Amino acid sequence: MFQVRMHGRGGQGVVTGAEMLSVAAFLGGKHAQAFPSFGSERTGAPVVAFCRIADTPIRLREPIVAPDALIIQDPTLLHQVDVFAGLRRDGYILINTAKSFAQLGLGEFVKGFHPERLLTVPATDLAVKHVGRPLPNAALLGAFAALGGQISLDAVCRAIESRFDEKVARGNVAAAKEAYEIVREEERLAETHHA
Amino acid sequence: MLEQCEGSHAVAHAVALCRPEVICAYPISPQTHIVEGLGEMVKSGVLEPCEFINVESEFAAMSVAIGASAAGARAYTATASQGLLFMAEAVYNASGLGLPIVMTVANRAIGAPINIWNDHTDSMAMRDAGWIQLFAESNQEALDLHVQAFRIAEELSLPVMVCMDGFILTHAFERVDLPEQAQVDRFLPRYTPRQVLDPNEPVSIGAMVGPEAFTEVRYLAHAKQLQALQLMPLVAGEFRQVFGRDAGGLISSYRTQDAETIVVALGSVLGTIKDTVDELRDSGLRIGALGITSFRPFPIAALRAALIHASRIVVVEKCFAVGIGGIVSRDVRMAFRDRPLTFLDLDWGIVNRVLERERTTRRSGPVAEGVLRDIGMVASRIG
Figure 1: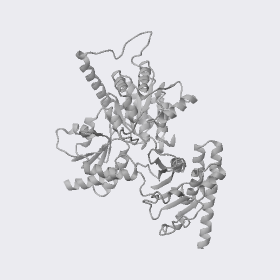
Figure 2 (figure 1 turned 135 degrees about the vertical axis):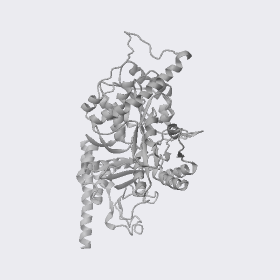
Figure 3 (figure 1 turned 60 degrees about the vertical axis):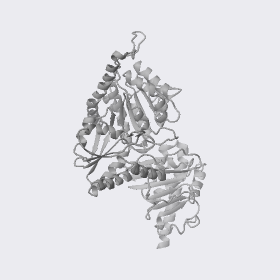
Figure 4 (figure 1 turned 30 degrees about the vertical axis):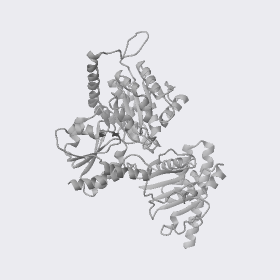
């Protein structure tokens, strides 16, 4: 079982993001379960949503306290909410920002994590560019497809298309694809660097 | 057809496949996406013939469902929490009149204090109202129970409440197998009402009954509910033949065969309990889980048969009857009046720890893993 926790703010689509991640996993033949942390959320308030992915049916309905991966939609949460709580040392971190982990003040914190599992992507910029609105979900899921190996880019695109009408979907698919390529490019650079 | 969707969407789809002719709902909080989805289906013509009636309150929702059902329509509504309590008087009328209305209750707590999270206080408050109450463990079962609910309701002329945990199920996206219309049509025949209010052939239903017969009327209602204990396993068996999967029935057992300790619960927490049972089994504890699907009528004989060899029974409650304690555990004891058994009620210490954990996760419902580990410790001390 692979467990993902998504952090964002009310209005950014955190819950929708977890749902689309579960749809992408489902389209890839996996079992998946997505659910929000329930509360009387308000626009701008910190929101958490969860997604479990497994090869067998998922019965567990606990909130995810020891995630394998974190997707952080809003970097302003980093020093307000304990977004890293319970994260495994071999876990993945994906943050929506144009900055690096060091620039975010996380350089010390992430020592001991696998560097190739840490990633930042300017998902909001990509969303503004392709969709015209600052909703980073699609780009983050595209990047996650390249990062975690749990879902394919194709499944992400199909999940987007199943959720939105054609015009909105087209922009989101473009954002997801560009985010995916950015990650792939970084991975290629890293490999060259190590070689 | 397999689909990854929200629990509310799955239930709306299932209800639509049951071809309701009247759906009424009060469309503000506490309400779920279920009636929203059904409203869209009626408006777009996907679900027809069906009339969707927006009413002015939950009380009106049940009252309109009563009128529609008495006039011969297959009627459906959904509610939760305070909404169910607001319709309470009409809820009793629906069963007293023997009307086969089906209602989803997305289980949520009752205020005050203001609380939107899941527990079973709403439907437990209606447990004596004469409705059949079924509890779903997963979204698949919620979907399947709705299809069965219309069958059971119409065969017995009794209303059925399908209870599914609010948020935990209604808002969860997971894989469900949505049946085909032809399958549902095969399983659920057209509704043929036993009696119809018709101006051309006037009859009265629910007319006044004095003390000389009221006791008998209530006893008849009880006898009719008990018939459901015979019917529900048959309906579940037929469901299996048509749809190829298990759902419904009275109870569900998990690894109880040789279990010394059996954990009894209702609803979605069973999934977490089953995973925990597997872990505890691996560590050598002989433990199993038992889910109560039919809470009303209460399946005393089935429970007794399933629990008779256990020496320790633990009931995880999601509703607390202030002044006496757990509700389900008291009903479970009914099955064992003649046998000394160790009942571990979740005493204050354990409950308090659960609440502590809830606070840290902002999540309702018993944190089953913690509860069971605690119980395992307590149990080993009791020896």
